[in-house]
Length: 120
Image: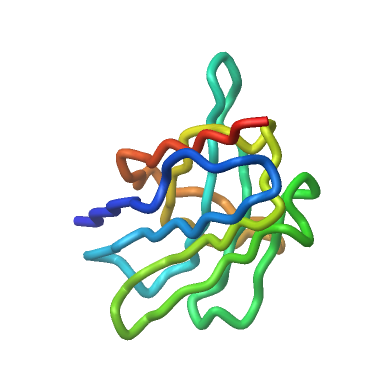
């Protein structure tokens, strides 16, 4: 059984930074990713990372501003978000998945999410 618990969200001004964490238990040595969902929108991919952390990928909208990382010793996934914009506001979810054809595919393991609000 996989359990994912996100934390670190809150309110930040545009241009600011925030670090999200995801504590994982169960099937933890797997590729993992971050997704987000804004009100009235579909959940969208943000970033993914391989089991070892050696390879990462990002949505174009966050490339160069966000960094995904993981600490396998304590089963924690991170998302460092810099230069935040109002359009980054959403509920952020971590996920366990796999890679197929080089693309990250989410499995149906999700945390409860953490709210990120960006004021302009």
